[in-house]
Image 1: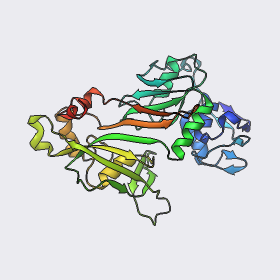
Image 2: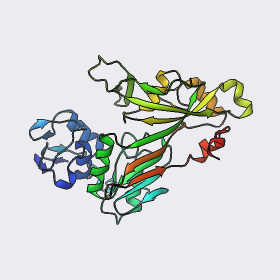
Image 3: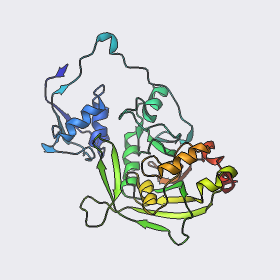
Length: 327
């Protein structure tokens, strides 16, 4: 099935400052996400007659040109999509323009890339009366913790502006291998994002000469040594619980920074110590120990400071003697 006509969409004021990919995902209901990203990468999507990238920020009045879209032909009986599971996640804060939820580990923030239904799809299904629910930022699938959702377009823009201008305060809890050196409090190392052959995102440390490297800063505070279950102490070795505040919000920033300095995060299946992860799993830690713990932002409507905190989930809080830091 083909939509044979070239289409032009005009960006309205409410959609200003949105990324191109998010704008198209909202406008092209029913079009596969993979197809949207493919036509962006190929240059078939034009913004004001120029090629654009998925992360291009739109402005009110922009003209977005879409090519004819070839959609897969499906049997009528098979066209009904499976029901999106309705799930209203545990809330940390909510008012008329925004909400903060406590995202569990193992749930992607949005569908795509082999994930049928993410947080935002499940939330929309649970709240069919909501006129708008949009992710303000993202967390990795295996990271738990504070996640912001806007309920009005104006709030979305105001909150995303804060993230872009680095005026938010974002602190994560991470359990890492080894004894952290007390004098190491700043990691200021540029990062380079790239894609694997299958399209999966990866990030590596680079240097200042790399034109695609982006400065990335993580501030580290030691909370203390963590003692694993007694039977695991010898095999797992020393571990340290860290509070990591990111001054820049790069993809996989904390995971790559900590691995780079020789202290990978427990359970990290992309950048971690895989043999150590297997040992951790044997002794009850079966997920990545990275949690979006605290987030400070200015309220998008009245400007007051909001200090949001996501409690450490039970599977992390109850592992070893982690709980003693939160009594």
